Length: 264
View (tube, rainbow, N blue to C red):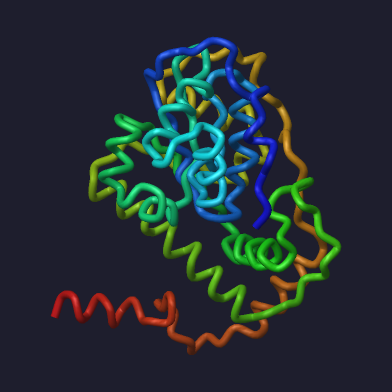
């Protein structure tokens, strides 16, 4: 995966340091549309700049840029630079980052206290899994970022594994929020794409923020990546799927068997 280099530019820092009074976490999964949502929110000037700061490769570069060696210090430096003038710091976190970057949800809550979580998901999870498979093969995760001339190859197992991962991680976010009593709202990418302004206003209402309606983008601010191949792969995947396959399996092991061992 190539870095989204633009995120490290000083031009995205706010000119004056503002104490962080509210934290927005876009709780997401890979290829859920969180990049677009982060850019839409930045355009308002009221949500910081929610980006994937704790992705492993991004995090390493932030450590080098700031001359620090841990995630807590990186977040402290980012808050000083990327907190908007109304006191809001935004970040997007995939479920896979919870353990990898923070060492668990409790540590995440310590470093991002009293956070407002916005769970972003997609209705068409097969399309999401296909998008993941294509991005992995081409190395192009964001439009304009390492655009590749590689022709991706259809692989049923790769899409199937991606589908299981997306569903598993969405469920894991919901389980974590429910079990911890965390403050969160759900947002569907389809609604963000169709009406960005309404999505932003919903988040502002959730966080009890006053924002200038004229600052809210009326249209998406990033380029669409999907192509005709995505639809072709979706149709082929549906045809090839075996309805007798064990559905509740992830990482090669049955979730049902795992739960049975735990509660037997």
